[in-house]
Length: 196
Image 1 (cartoon, helix red, strand yellow):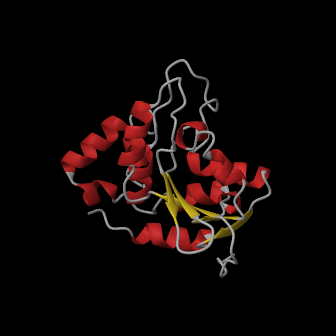
Image 2 (tube, one colour; image 1 turned 90 degrees about the vertical axis):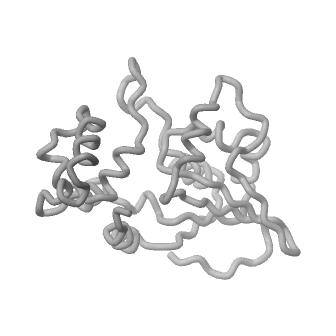
Image 3 (cartoon, rainbow, N blue to C red; image 1 turned 45 degrees about the horizontal axis):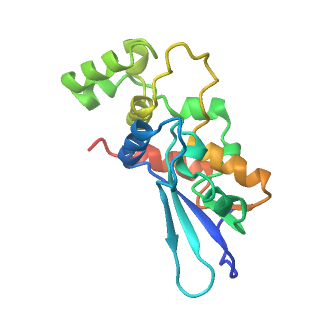
C-alpha cells in the first residue's frame, strides 16, 4: 500500500535508520531503570495545520517506553496515520531468511581478509564461518548490529525490535497504517547496497 495525500490530522512517520544506528547505540547505553522524561528520537514537524512527528527507529531491541516515553507515547496512539517503510507483518520469516543468502560463498572476497576475520570472530556464536561466507553483505551487517543476547536471559524474552513495537502499538490503537514500499522493493534495495 502506498501513502496517499493525507488530510489534516496528526501523523507519525517512523524513520528507520538503516544507514546508521549510532543514535540507537547511544540511547541503549543511556537506558536506565528510570524512563527518560522526553522522547529521544521524536521530532515535531509543523507547517500550518496539525503537527506531524518523525520517530527514528532501528531494528533493535530498545523498549518502546525508553524511546517514546509517556506522555509522548500518546502521539503514537493518537495519530491519525502511521507511515512506515514496509509492512513488517507481510514479511514471511522463511522468505526473509532465503533473501539473506547467496548461491556462492563470496562474502570472504567481498570483505577482504581482515574484515572477514573480524566478522567470523564477532559472529562465532551465531553461525560457523563456512555458512557466513554465503551471507549477502547487508545480512552480515544486520547480524553485526543486532544486540547480543543478555546473559542469563531466555531466548525470545528480550524486547521486540523497536519498529515492530511501534507497529504493534499503532495496530492496538487502531491507527491507520500506510507503507512506503513493498517487501519485494525493500529486498531489491538491500541487494543493491554497496559495501562502502
